[in-house]
Image (cartoon, rainbow, N blue to C red):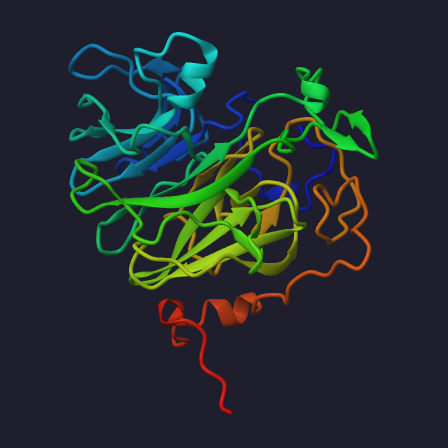
Length: 363
């Protein structure tokens, strides 16, 4: 639980102490009934999130467990529900094989979660795939959009040794920062979408999103993406980076193609999440019970650590690995900031046609 006091405690209706952490997602069933999914467990509320049932398991029609980590729950048409989670290939036996076989799967229910169909695989084999929690979006057209990320690299720490604790190498010293251990890994983002309510899935056509720092093939990672629908067919994607800024990309075709990631003005090296404009109840896991549909891009975003135990720090923008613990490198500058939120959500502004390349300069 954060040591920072609430600014408006009088608005708190209920406080539920939980340990769901990275796996928590909600869907509104009918009336005030809400379903919460976390890992392989479910909870039901009959009063809009004020009180919750004990956790209960879910099983598909084949008798197998429903749900896993990377949880995302979404309401479909009619009495339909969709659930995304992480799958592991049954043939994987060693920890390395299991990790490299991570993939996203989709369960479907046609009776508001009473029964579930066996899972459908979303991401292809050959590379480990992950997703942030509560990121599955159903757009105005009914398309399901799931933003995911891959990561590459050996798991060893400095000097080819196993890392002693989660942390980072700071000034040649291993420091516990309660942060993700990103030093030896590279990650990139892609988007999968379905037009038949999760029965089949396709990937965005223009390959993985990553940060191109210059045209000499200097790249930087992006991960833990989160998407919102700004207007019909127009999507805004926010991504976590190690460069001291939240990066964003735009799509004008409901996720099929994307602009190159560009930095926002927000200084935030930690994980990002959407902030709901209205809350019926709050959970200490960081998830909230929404009283309204998933937020639009017009709502605010906040930055915060994805760890339970990280401490506040001075955020210094720069190209360094972690602005919380390292100063910007000499002679380094950030790219120009993206337009302010008021300009970003102006749906009358056309999306630049990046596929056509840069506009030629007049001689």
